[in-house]
Length: 284
Image 1 (tube, one colour):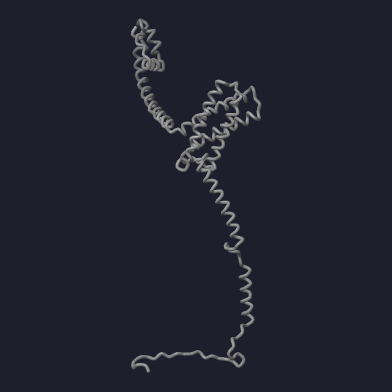
Image 2 (cartoon, rainbow, N blue to C red):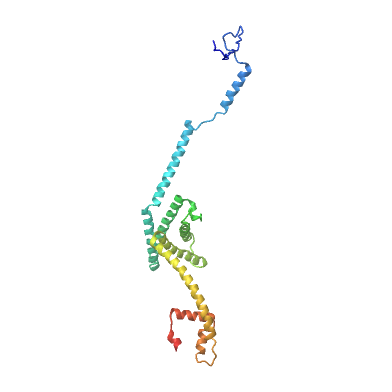
């Protein structure tokens, strides 16, 4: 019995109605419900797709992954070879040997060994350029952003040198030109092979440092030249007005007129006096 003052909870049960034919057995579904369920099963079967865990799809993924891993391993191996110190040393020695061969070819042009050697050097340079493009991508020759491609100028230089060498070889094999304007152009292209020697500055850091020092010194010399040009111009005005326009009665008028007749002549005279002074001539 509930305590006094507390409300009692009342439970309600739904009545179960059973007929004489469905007594104790579940009621079979209606025909409409059967059709809905069958349509749902057919729809789900029609929308069935192969999952990536199926054996066939896994086989394709394994083959693709194996091919990608093989390509990555080849690229890594090529990158290791290209960035190895032995490969850089070999290219340095090859550039020095190419410069020596060019000098010997100039002094001994009758020897027949020079042309095969030049073709061998060119072949190695072409292989090096292709390795660089394979390792670093084609952007090494056209991306002008120094942050992305800091060696863009050296890469363009290598590309131009190798392209000129290939073009030279193509002309020598296809065209047989002995005279005329095309022959002159052909000789100029062959002479441009000399610019290969500048590649030494790229690999030998000390020479590169000296080259940078010469460039900085040239800038300083340019400013000094501008300063001295202003000084020469000012002094030339004074010399032309004082010494270059003396009366003819003066015994030194002819000499001074020749040396300080106008501003350009006076500036040249002052420059000669500064660089290699010949004072006795002016004293006399």
